[in-house]
Length: 79
Image (cartoon, rainbow, N blue to C red):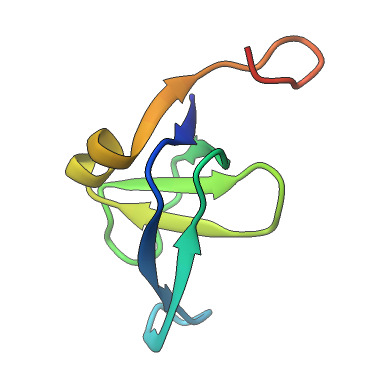
């Protein structure tokens, strides 16, 4: 499943060991994320950015508020 960000928000960055770094990044409107079954820090939903090497784990409420489900065509373009 793929989700497109519809409302910008910030999230806390975690290191390779699952600890918060004190840094924050922004999820930009229009970015597309793919659901992944991995879970590193205990979020409800793990999403991988399809364009850059980045991931987030968010609650179901955050998914509902800041994303909408989308699909890709056979060429990997958003439909």
